[in-house]
Length: 272
Image 1 (cartoon, helix red, strand yellow):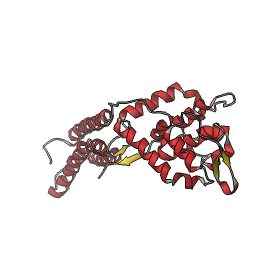
Image 2 (cartoon, one colour; image 1 turned 120 degrees about the horizontal axis):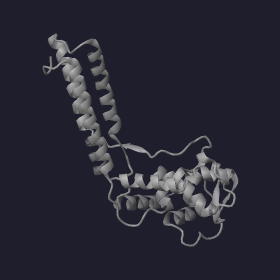
Image 3 (cartoon, one colour; image 1 turned 90 degrees about the horizontal axis):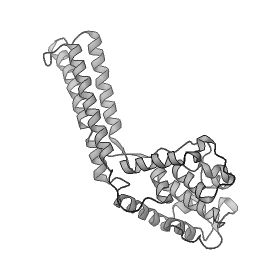
Image 4 (cartoon, helix red, strand yellow; image 1 turned 135 degrees about the vertical axis):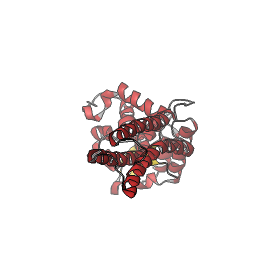
């Protein structure tokens, strides 16, 4: 029997080791990306942190729409009339340029100038620490190694007992250890998938969502009388559903799904 302890005692030790390994993995995740520099994210950048490129573009086009610059034409095309609002962000200006000729929403998203503006947004967020670099995501994934090591120890005990014909404890202890090994391995695999956003970005989004909880679509806010800033802030923090409540026909043109809830930040694998 590996390593000379009873089944129930080994299971308790195993659970304690799992707790320590989970604490290590969570600590690495929460400490990575805590430090940021530069100015806080603007609304377009907040939208990117919330739900990536499509939401950032939806916020930008909504800003143009509220400024009276975007109209819906035939065959679900969009086009701008007049100049962009004063002080527009670079992505908003790129969207305005792309919409000088009628285009579908899919064509707007594929526009090279819009793509360049989005890459600049991402570059700024990575440079200032709001988005994790590839190295940081790999570090977070490596923080789960202790979990896999603990699972391997449990499997080794079970295999040793089976091969050597020794007892690994009573049936309840063996079944419990087997389930714990499986849960540990699955938990480790789940934790190796790392969000692109750093700890500081996740903390910022949580704080802003608390401060602007009255804009959460799940609370069914009344949009009548609210200004453009409130609409764009609600979209940047909670997804595009506020636009669906204010301008449903236009929202549908931007691909807003009435059945979709609050966006969840994309989790990207760091197993590279």
